[in-house]
Amino acid sequence: MTTDWNADLYLRFAEERTRPAAELLARVPLESPGRAVDLGCGPGNSTELIARRYPAASLAGVDTSPDMLEKAKARLPGVSFILGDIEHFRAEPAADLLYANAALQWLPDHESLLPRLMESLAPGGVLAVQMPDNLDQPSHRLMREVASRPDFVAKIGAAEKVRAQILSAEHYYDLLAPLASSIDIWRTTYCHVLADAPAIVEWVRATGLRPFLEPLDDAERTAFLTAYEREITAAYPPRIDGRVILPFPRLFIVARR
Image (cartoon, rainbow, N blue to C red; front, side, top):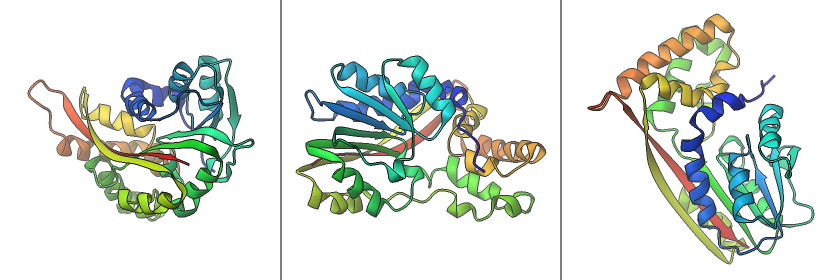
């Protein structure tokens, strides 16, 4: 059984995680949407951005994590937060803005998912999506390599299946173009400056490492994190001031119905 997300761990890098959310929202071409939904709202940091830009909108947040929703409700008590699954989400009534920041990469079958989300938009509505595109980065490649070692593979299983590769920008364009009046699509690599290699491990423990750590017992988790941190330390050497740089590619899509 999948354990809940750890909102406190996620928020240790709240500023870095919120920056792409803000840059996605800045490209949304809507003046005053009537109804907006933050899909995979997490602890409400992205929902707060929507509330500030569109204070008159009827705003809701959807997430599968009770811990994340508890933090979101404390942050924004006037917003409706709903325990729910994006994979089966349908806006009723239709939404003017569906916003998904760093959420859809966890879901399968984007060929069906994204057109279904577009169908939940009112005419002229916008689907705004940001997804990490970092599975080829050392931070994530090394997760799979450590997970494939004899000490861990029996419990974790096929590391390549833990999270599927997202589609290419060209594929998403072709998928959405028949349903959209306009599409804005771009890819940005953020270079996050962190204190040291263990900080990179802390970053991904809240997200990408979760599916690898969940099947393990406490001793195995400790062994996994020790082995992974050793590999991360070698892959991300310190810069001149002792800090490290974590390159983080992300794919952005803003499609208007």
